[in-house]
Length: 527
Ligand code: MSP
View 1 (cartoon, rainbow, N blue to C red):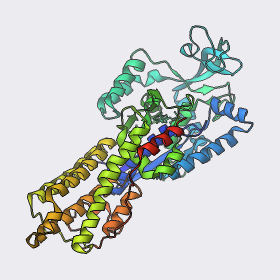
View 2 (cartoon, rainbow, N blue to C red):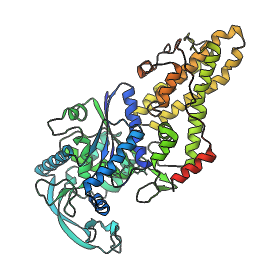
View 3 (cartoon, rainbow, N blue to C red):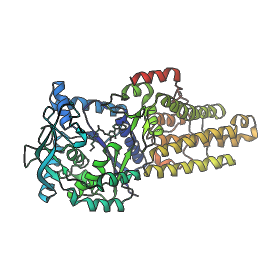
View 4 (cartoon, rainbow, N blue to C red):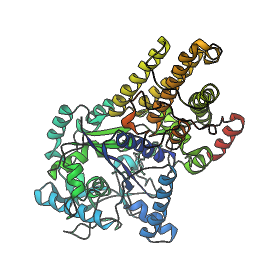
């Protein structure tokens, strides 16, 4: 297994504020990055903003500011949201930064010199009001501009093209040789059947109809097509081709590093088809994994800014706390499938898993250790009963299943195994009946072992939940009397870790939410 990881999110358009759909992708990527780091791996995590293009130029014009002022303002909001959600990105790339622009220009020149990019003519349907080209499908049979609804004309303009035909065979071989490159598997078939088999056109990689983009050095009437510009962020952020390229060498060029792009289903084509081709043209290695997550829906339609049906993540996090929101996103919506956001499910999920199961387990256990052992966790003495043995084996299995599932990017399933451990531990209380053992002097050893096993189950669950429950897990460690250093993942298999620790009773981690109050509140946010 590789020891180093480079994990990226898509770079989002700062055309408007981000919504819960974007927060979903970044949060899940963050959970993955944190889990790698906690297990001791070196992990570099990147997110950013994709700031060029006609839409941004137009939005800025409407707002009466320059495009740069416009994006600067919106990107401020990105930083705030990622802070609020406790995202641990190592860098934030903006496509308007000099370090990025230089790399895009350099890449364009290399592809041009190699003969993979050539100057040709772009034919399409042109809207003179919006100064934009549209495709046959976009204008429909009546030839109407999808933006302003006015008539469009057939027109052509000079443009640069990328010769996809040079790389199609090689891409197909790459897909065959690397069955885990594009996950879920169904996405690969979709790409092949929808785009490659019918014949892939050369890709138009420059525009002359607007100017808010990276200028083509060889021909300054042109700006680089926004997707060639945007995809390059994954290497420009590491300093590719610059004097400062240590990160590029350390992550992109190192055999020891697994490169993982996380993206939504809407942008699979660009990542799975064109990005590997661009990289091959530049003589660079391709990513190891592209994980396509599903989209968050609102009442069956995709949550999107243009539809105006978005959930604003800020008030949600402010009211319920970062842990509950991160948990809901990770656990409720299976990473890899579409899912819909529902206020009822939000409240139910937080109550069932966090308040009733996990929070309650901690609460009950710390109270019992207080009552029966003056707050000191009894030392581990092996398993005293079959119940202890069975809980121990569930703990061990949970750790190994969790690691395998996380390595396989099955994040929702990994977190679900931790739920099962917590449920199992609650059941263990019912099976062992500590209140009855406490009444019998001869059962003191049994009772001590139950308390030790419960404390250990809580520690392991909190450790494994930590990439998601970024604040509550630390509070659980504190209640167990563990310093953050002692709670480190490297000690996860140490059965004696909790021996004789003095516990600290604290407030409940997740107070129960009242659905009759909270569901209407969240519904209000969605209006
Ligand atoms: N700028 C491009 C990406 C360039 S990457 C080199 C872009 N930006 S975007 O702002 O539209 O964000 C796209 C990504 O945001 C999606 O791929 C997905 O990861 C996330 N989501 C946007 N809407 C979403 C939902 N409704 N649900 C889940 N994720 C969503 O495309």
